[in-house]
Image 1 (cartoon, rainbow, N blue to C red):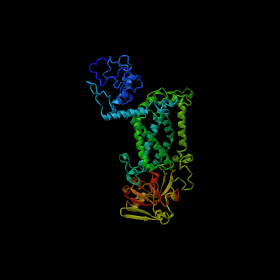
Image 2 (cartoon, helix red, strand yellow):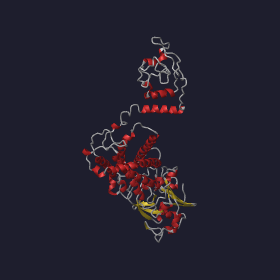
Image 3 (cartoon, rainbow, N blue to C red):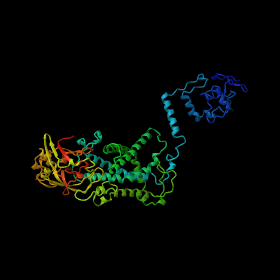
Image 4 (cartoon, one colour):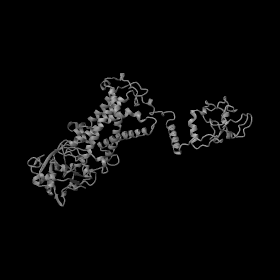
Length: 582
């Protein structure tokens, strides 16, 4: 046996050839110190050696079992190369028992990593191996699964530009719609009392022009319906990104995926709740106003972040191809877009069966069809008959009261006794109170105004001729101004003062709280701001189009205020309290 070299340390001598090894097979081939579990290890002799490895003191050239010809030694040994680095590192950091020989004499102990750091590294490694064993799993996670030659950044950018403009208009009109309820008056107008800073923009909703709310809601609802095909096409164009593999590559990638989740989930939530509200299908939990309001802010936050990140790329992409050239390209000459960093272009595209012109045309045709069967409920006139998808597109009947309603008297629990001969109107301001019969109201100065009814669902009526008492007249009955001043000139839409200006006393009219005979429901009462009360077209209507109101339209008396949401034009009014809020 050759002498031991300096620095060598043999806890035990290996058996000579032909000599029985006193260790059992289990001692030679098991235990955490065994170093032959690599796939390339092929030497039985090396497998039996308990301390085989670069640090073993017997790896010198004169050792009988570790000479130059031994397949398990030297720089080319497969178990000492980089391919075994991971397994070795795991065996050294997972608390495994070291070889029986202990630490070689004179060798320095490698510094150990912190326990928490090592555990995190191992957990991350296991997660990566599970998520990415041999690449993406079969199916939509693999890029070659998506083969449409139309997908690419240009088509996505065109659809994104349409949505950028459309969603912006939807959000602004939605903010106006919320402000029209005058939530600053508190309950019951305010359906989101915990909104905090989200109500920073609120302002007193004006009482004119009278068609303001009708226009706002018509645009909001009709545009939302029309954008549905564009939204679906946009999601189709980017659907490969939703299945990108691995799902999470880093913390930054996780945040990006979270923003996409809020964006896609938010837009689906807003469109779904809006469309259900238009159809009066309140299948969602809670109030539509609360859900739609907070959902809109979540969505618009994700939308703004997405636009900020993608707008430069969208601009460059739109400039790279001409819209006219694409619209002139038939299907037989349609080619995939050049591959780029977006990952939207199919790596193995199928032959084109439709051009990009055809795809955009199909989306546009779908939007036009939805416009044709929706817009009539807001525009009115002959187009009302085409509003096939609108619940208020049905024929409401004929006669003076033959126009749309939202809730019938029966559905609101209004009984005949509530609106019969025993009905009374109570008008109150401070300690002063007046109780009036309907006959007494008809004896007071009457005024008229041509106003529509417009509701949050997007439907509206044409102008109807309403007649009754101005709200300022009722305020004067309880000491707010003088009756002869507020009714200085009778007639349709006439001014309050004889000189064509608002009488001084009218300027002092406060807000009013209106209550109904309806005992249950979100809008059985409502507040009106002072600017609405002072408008000469704001009436307690007793008649419409020359006839008494029907019970479904609010008999014996209802509120009608220009540019006011329909639900705040309270029906079956029983009490007016000036200068008070609930």
